[in-house]
Image 1 (cartoon, rainbow, N blue to C red):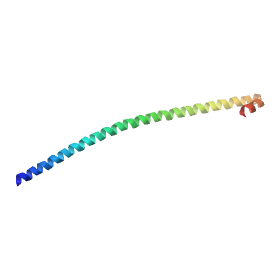
Image 2: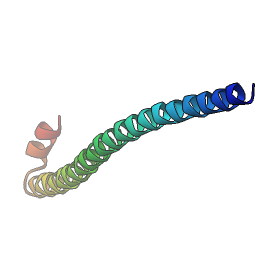
Image 3: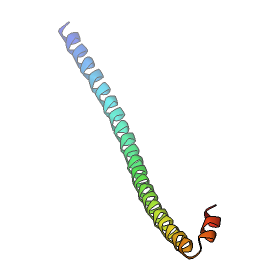
Image 4: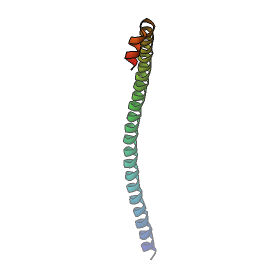
Length: 89
């Protein structure tokens, strides 16, 4: 009876070890998956930051062009108000 009890304890310990090994494998796989996802998200964030910067640059450029066109129209208006009225519609 004592030997059987020791054998049962050993078998129980063996089961725990196998479950621990399987859990470790699953956790390692999950960690690898999360690390890949993190790389992807960082890449997307970098691309997003580049797009935001490009958008800001284009908006500033558009504003500069708008100001230049407005100045040209004001100069045309100063020279010939009829032409300015025809251009602006």
